[in-house]
Image (cartoon, rainbow, N blue to C red; front, side):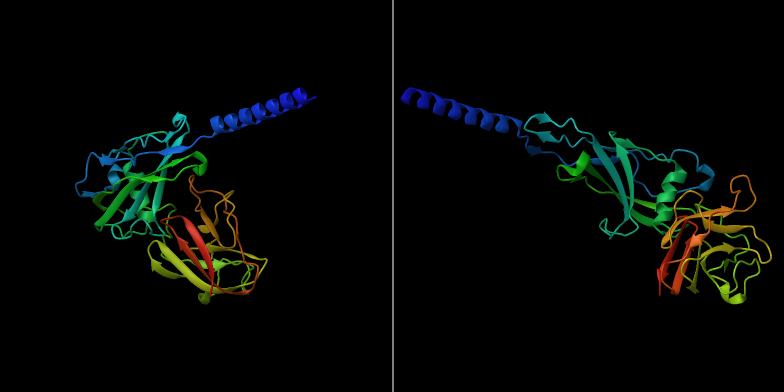
Length: 283
């Protein structure tokens, strides 16, 4: 009996040791990586030109592989690189920062239109030089390890005006719909005329009725052009993508109506044609 007890005890010790070894063998630890080094083949000041919109900008951004390493060796996981674009002094905390995701590649060369679009979406004034900074953030799938950031590359760039959606050709915009006392009409009263903040932005503060809808018109006594929610984009009462019908092949078919918020009150509705977005904020 004593021999049997010793034998069973020995087996249990071996089993525990085997399990511990297996756990130790399966434990993968992150050993680190190297921050990517970002370079650009051109850093001189540049003026973007709309006549070259379809061409490559001439700037090629390159960066090094961060070489993420684990106890099992070099990482086999996909690495996503995010080129961050911001203005000098914002330290990449600007709420309008632009981020371009590039998977498993170590270079980026945008078109003039694409590059200009990032600057327009940041709200930078066109035909004016701006100090712009770039850096790359390297991140591993599922955020299993800390992100690594590159050095900063600086370039002075002058963007041109470009819009995501055609601006009102009349320079006027009116709100209409059953969310307002005048209901659906293509001849809304003067108090439903929007304020022209700039040639690319309009806004209006108006009382909206819950559970209703509205759109925007540019010409009195005409239903087109009209602006609303881009069809199929899922715009909400808080904001979304703008849609347009101006009777052209590129913009045909009425956009969806914008839904009102769930509670009554005064709201500021802003339409930005550079970003192609509308935003609704309670006042």
